[in-house]
Length: 158
Image (cartoon, one colour):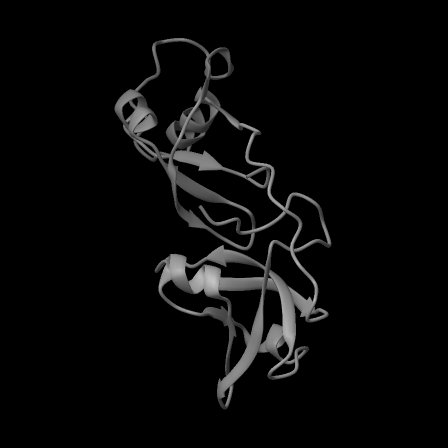
């Protein structure tokens, strides 16, 4: 499991080293993200222009449509800084509302037991398929897929 961001504004989930690979190409080397994604974290030019090559940085990640990790915020940090430990005992509830939103947007909703969207709640386990810098994404879950015929939609509370 890899934590991509924290739930508190202005805080960071990851730490790495900022690198300027080539003119205009920058990335963050982070062992955790490299192990999870198989590639360094890409940094856009606007964000990269605020960081110094070789410096330690704290950052959060989003995932591109192609599955690459992207830094969506980062700032220099002390070499001794460590991210706050993750609270893994908390569960997030997903409701049929996610599937209802998919139906309304025309993304393949096939029904969820004939009840109103907010009337059913379940704790689910899934895999993040995509998540963008606007805090919007999709989670693949066997249970949701079998019940609704689509992926769960997630928002900024992930």
